[in-house]
Length: 311
Ligand code: C5P
Image (cartoon, rainbow, N blue to C red; front, side):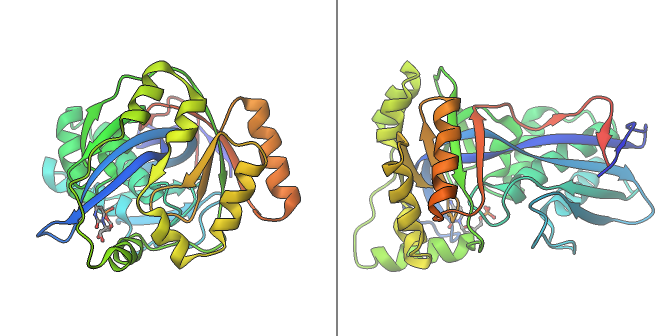
């Protein structure tokens, strides 16, 4: 990693991970997606995406969480850049460098975050002048979690997660994330959720009043009690060891814990920055979690980094 001045032909965007405070999974839709009701919170674990004018379209990856990120045409950030180029009539390729600090295949929307960052970075590089609404439309076509990575903060998601509405919220929240060594595939977790619920009537998903009340009053204790994820049984079925991590975190003083999105990252809400640090130490010392991270939330969505940047 080096530091360099951001050249006129290069733009860096910083973009956060997310955790779902409440994830209700409804029936499968005709298009194969599940109808969702969710509450997203953007958390202070960030990737940085740098786009640079180039002769060819390409992606390079660095940073602590770079293992397993595809650098071929399936990379979602590359697809995002190409989609925007087509939309605004740009024919000059860019190279993308992803500095990854968000776990890969971890249920924290790292790939979606990179796609959102690529949209913002290319819009800036090409002076395309897209509005946030236009970018959000493109983002929704790229993936269900991409629009939230653009907006950040706290928002309700409906549809397949891409339709966002504001949430009245106050306060800061201190999270600990226990990372898993092996990722989980989102489609496989949804398929496991369907398998576990087979034969049962699945109601239309509705938001949890408890989560909304806790956010409105800025009450981390109440939020900790209200955390809920319909995908958790599926993630636990695919990675049974996560149950031990969840139990340990709550035993060591977390206000609440849940599998983040489709997992396997386990998210714990704590009462203060000190409590978060204590929980990290306890989880690591007990040996149930290898890699743990702390993050404050909420944070804003994808934003251009002014001045010096990582290359
Ligand atoms: O939208 P995205 O590409 O991130 O979704 C990845 C996969 O997760 C989908 O292909 C689908 O299998 C599953 N999914 C779903 N219902 C949603 C969101 C995602 O079934 N609402």
